[in-house]
Amino acid sequence: MLTKESIIEKLKEVKDPEINVDVWTLGLIYETSIYDDGVEIRMTLTSPFCPFADQMIQQIESSVTELLEKDTQSVRVELTFEPPWKPTDEIRARLGL
Image 1 (cartoon, rainbow, N blue to C red):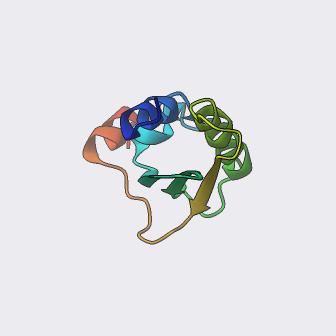
Image 2: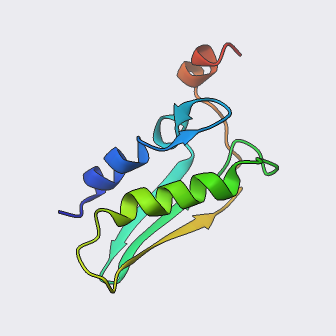
């Protein structure tokens, strides 16, 4: 069943290749919305110049698509840099910053 919780579980499977921490734990996901025609995810990146942006977006789309119940539904990822990403103290500690 498609729920915000099931989407979050899928997002936890997608890792930032540079940092090797999932996009949910990193705080890159700002919003998830479920609509009749699919899912919309608003996210950011650790840097606007992230060389893995396309790869991560494709992984998110692919992973969350597994949850969709109808062929007419899709996953849309909107990239934003407002507000800029700021790691939590916990993430800073994990990354040794």
